[in-house]
Length: 184
Image (tube, rainbow, N blue to C red):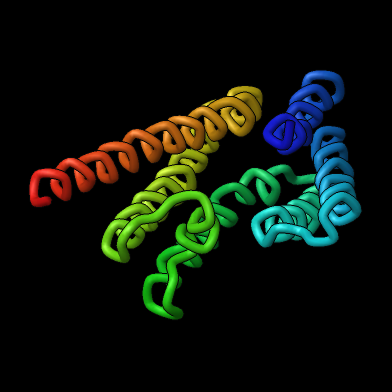
């Protein structure tokens, strides 16, 4: 249910884009993101840092896009957000005792520190790849292709990373279990 709720602003963006173009879609996404923050706060009495960061940047870059009537500001937003996330994840390896990946997932799985760091670096790479892919699509394809990539391409890449992560964790944890059993 939460995944569908998280995907809803992108669906609204694409529907608004197909209905009325980039400026209507930008405004619709701004409103949907603000609504997402409000709903998450009402339901959980907290707002995730990733959602809050994304929303603030959508409002800033969307506002600039609408004020200047130039979509390039909004189209750069995914690159900036992904680079900020990559920097935050990378920085978490240097500051503090836990990586961001461990802070987000540590309650659900148990990995040793070196595996948490490796997994964290996989996410850094994913965010850098998403940032780069956004620019490649933005500067080499038309606006509609970019809009579809923003919704389906970025989501598909992220989903593929989640699946890769699950397989990676399974291999690493099952491999460790097999090694422990053979030692015992």
